[in-house]
Length: 371
Image 1 (tube, rainbow, N blue to C red):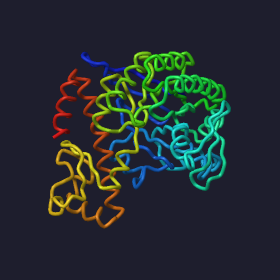
Image 2 (tube, one colour):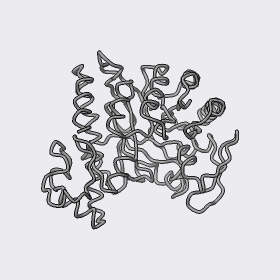
Image 3 (cartoon, rainbow, N blue to C red):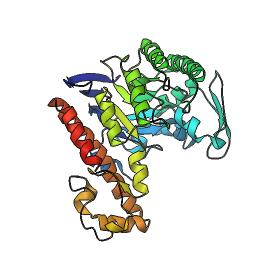
Image 4 (cartoon, rainbow, N blue to C red):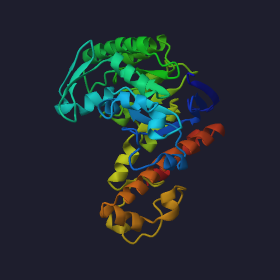
């Protein structure tokens, strides 16, 4: 079946909203943060550990799985769910961002057909088209697939962005025309950079294609926070209220709150696991670097308010020891904590929306976090 969004409650003072998304592999509450499992695994965590931290939806990456092990291998396994032994909802991105960020030497040739570039693994010439991206995702059999789009750098001229938006719209239609997996939903992506008129045009024309959900792309690519929030504002006002809204690549706690306030339902980012592997942890009082000498004899949890496995059983001193010694268990504990922190944040956000207390919750969280 296609996904279905049910709006349960809208905040009285903001555009924040509480809902449920129904999928083939279960329902999940929104707003939600989705861990990223680029290569069909969330780094260092098992599917069981993901469930323990309250994760509902995870992401896998079309580009990486196309290169290794190949979509045909995953298809022969029965799709991503049996391949990675995860029975919850899975979203696959289109591979577009990776093409523009990981291509060998960053050299690429964007043409109407698609993008010519070199593999980041071995330099092999590749061509990824809107049709191929969708065909790969059809074989991966995720619950939600993403349209193939151009992800322009920041900043670019209005002239460049206008051409890019038009190309992305044409690519979206081409991808939608070849989407054949009836059990898989397809999201369109709104682009337009920092330009209000292009965001409006992109959103309106993408909505006309009647996708199952809509994503806001091209944010968190080097722009200021104020510019990013304006990009969201300029896009979301033209999106339908009866379908999910997804802000791609955003995982900073304050950015999640700002996105929710503007009506965003879904977030994802590699940030929590990436910074975890380098010894950084989210806490209610802001980020900390566990390598800091002051934690050497600190026998308290990473965050006393956190209910994750790491905080229940281990201290800063022990986790610091593991990270300093480059033990993988330390990276795992940090990843468990950071993911649980963001998932718990969205759980608390949902409660605040239900009680029409979202702004009060947001202000209190930011006040503590910036200490």
